[in-house]
Image 1: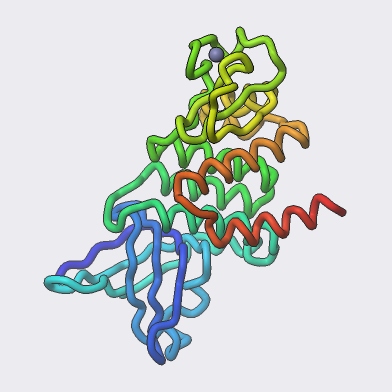
Image 2 (image 1 turned 90 degrees about the vertical axis):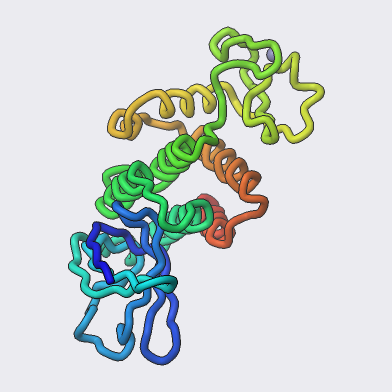
Length: 259
Ligand SMILES: [Zn+2]
């Protein structure tokens, strides 16, 4: 039997039997990993207050011989990100990011860049140093880029005119092809979404800059909402359905913006 330890963020947990918890983590060393925490339900002492959603832990696991689930041996709390769980809107965003990682990543394949991205976004969400909506745009754009699915905003997919050279104040995004079309080329598009050029330029700017610099971009309210709606649709298109947590998030958000 071998053991390993790694920083890890808790993505999902469910009760198993009378005493145990099954937990999915995004770990730095092993990527997405599902482990069993034995007696975690029964013995409050053992993992007291540690196994909460979105917590950053240092965990130690034992791998069984042959097949079977890794067993959580010990955990030390690095950051509980408790202000996320105390705020329903922040919880909704973090749940959406966690679900995307859970749906998209293969078990046991290290994804250090996605781990650092989630860590950065949870930390900023927890402290409130950046707005929830801005962070979700950052998270989704980076997540798509690390997954090899970046939307291409650089030029018209058809006539190759650069985005800066296109004169109209809106563009069309073709979901199936993952790129934009200028007004003149857009008539044949099948799965098209209209986007204002200002929003496209802001998303391009975020793609081109590092996280810290990208986080300083000030969106106008319409560009923020348009960018979020676009990315959420783009991702749902690639997954083939709307993630469960996204329905909840969108409901909450529509109530908030009605106020
Ligand atoms: Zn064109």
